[in-house]
Image 1 (tube, rainbow, N blue to C red):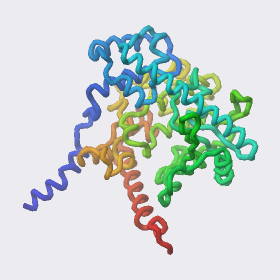
Image 2 (image 1 turned 30 degrees about the vertical axis):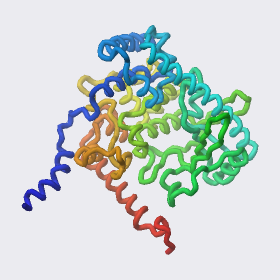
Image 3 (image 1 turned 45 degrees about the vertical axis):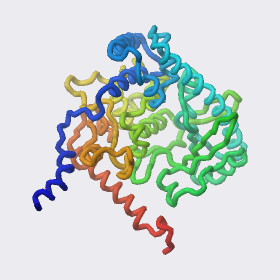
Image 4 (image 1 turned 135 degrees about the horizontal axis):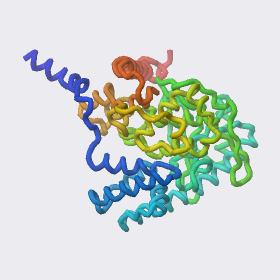
Length: 420
């Protein structure tokens, strides 16, 4: 009886740790469609990649003549408008229903971004008048600076970085523009967990425009940035259509931020079962757009995390030629297992989440994530030593995160609504 009990208790743990390492965690049609779309995760497509995409489209048509699931997955990955933009010049014609879906996504995001970016111009002008320094992040900066058309980069919100001491004035400035916090009350410790103020909203022409004010570019609760970086050092200025001057972080800091955002443990699990392709496109598109301005030897020396991320993303989808020439050819036999697989464990997927898988799989997802993701998250590159991170570094980080959460939720009297 005791032996049976111990077996039932330890079985899931042992299975999670000693499952064969080459097992494809997310296989089948979804994996095939994801890898097809990953080839299109580029702002600009060179002739060699175009030929590869045409061949992949022919293979897709033979396996899935109706392209079932393509438009839905493209939208979930943030690539709907970009896929529509790329296919016709490549001579690839999707089935009519899928073509209509992609066109609809393109038009919807184009119209929504026109509204968002007009609001952004208004915000930048108001912040300038109030004397609040502000840096545009992610889609707010990239839609205009990197993508051929702003509508090709879908946005759910617009992220702005302000100095911590300027947060009250920045929030007041947004309130004067009509932005409001729609939540009745934020849970205790919410800002400490998310490292940005609660989102503010304003209805504009039937669209709810969302803005998030950040004061910390990298950190999340329980996690530190991969490398220290001052986002306010040497920011880049550029003009908005209304002639207002906007700023974004330097090339190195922007790439570091985009790479860290891609692999952060705090995303919704639906977005990270595989790395979200619009975030991959942001990184590769930015590197391609500013390839001639980036100090590549300096980037490798000062930002090895970025260098590692680019090298590993090149195993998911070919690097742009202007970027690839700065990297040595990949070593034969040095392809990590699980390319394109993401992180599905804790804390991305909480223990109580309905999306959590069976306990043995959940523990494996948490403590034994795919090799490619592990290398990406910890900046190990395609060939760096894996064993210390696999057996010590990553489990230690997870256990520290659990301790942090327990201390915050159960041991801190402030979080429990009590007073010391």
